[in-house]
Each structure stands twice: as structure tokens, then as C-alpha cells.
Length: 107
Length: 122
Image 1 (cartoon, helix red, strand yellow):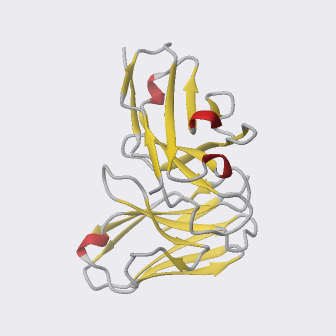
Image 2 (image 1 turned 180 degrees about the horizontal axis):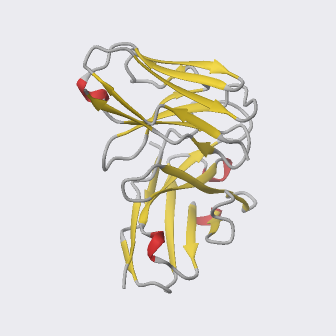
């Protein structure tokens, strides 16, 4: 199975900060990667698919990039509603695998 | 509108069996894989396994192989996750989601069930 290493596990940031989260996979997955946001008690929400395509309705401050084995999610200017946990998911091979999650906390 | 509707919360005792469901509507159910995801209290998302309703092909993540059974009934657009003998460590929220294998599409992981909370306690 493909291993997905997501970092950091926790990030303290302030409103307006630029935030970058990274996922690395143990083998190449082309662009079969999605990013999700999850708030406490809520269903995961897809933000980005195909590594870089923004889900309809997701603010443009969210950007995904990468191909192969290294991927990033960037929030250009953190907003109060962005404090949440973020997960990447590879789905190039079955079964899919999640990264370990990144909790973005208020500094 | 695409919807995945899961069965309600369950409270069970260790050793009991359980089957929870995920019913799809608003799309051609048989054309998409259904995946099951576990989230233990305060913990991260874990992928459990998948089923393709057209032929009931299943695949499990190593951690869940032999621990649960995933199935589907395409005639009623429903996927299932079941346990033969529950343990306290199965206490978690369980989600289902749909996706396509083999190509990138906006229709993969776009819709999720509302989650089914399973509590196992004596």
C-alpha cells in the first residue's frame, strides 16, 4: 500500500498568515490526490481534487499543487473560518490512504 | 441532488454483531465505488475499504482486513459495513463516500454520508 506522510501534524497560525501543508507519498501517484477540511463534529469537505483543481465554492485563497510524490496545500491568507483539520488523500491505488492530518490552530 | 444517507447511531455491547448502511440517491449508484472511513473519537480519518456495487468487488485496507465486511446491494442502491463481533475499540464515527477509480473527476469524494456513530460499551 502507498504510505502518505503529511506534515506538520499541528500548526499554530494567525489570521492573515500564509499556511502551507505538505503531503509526500511513498511512490508516485501522478495527480490522484485530494485535500479535505474537517471541522469538529462535521463531515469532511473536499477542497481540492486532482492535486490542484479547486472545488466549486471553495475560496480562491486555497491552492493545491504537486505531482508524483510531493504535494502542497496553501492557504494564502488564513481566515477565522479556516481553523480546522486538513487531510490529504491519495487514490491512485486501491485502497486509498489518508495523510495523518494537520490541525491548524489559532496562535 | 446526489445524496448518501447513512443509518442511525448504534449502541452495542462487546461481542454483538452490527450492520450499518449507506444509501445513495441522485446518481447511478452502480457506477461509483463506495468507500468506508473510520474516525475514532478525537482521531484522524482512516480508510477502511471499498466496494463496487456493480460486481460487489471489495478491497480492504490492511488494518481492517478480516475485521469488517463490506458489501453492497445495487438493487436498492445501498452499501453496508458489518461486524461479526464488536469490540470497544470499534467505537467511532463511520462515514461513506463515493468515488471513481482510474481517472480524476469532480465526482470523486464530493459527497459523503452524514456519518454513523457506533458506540460499543458493556
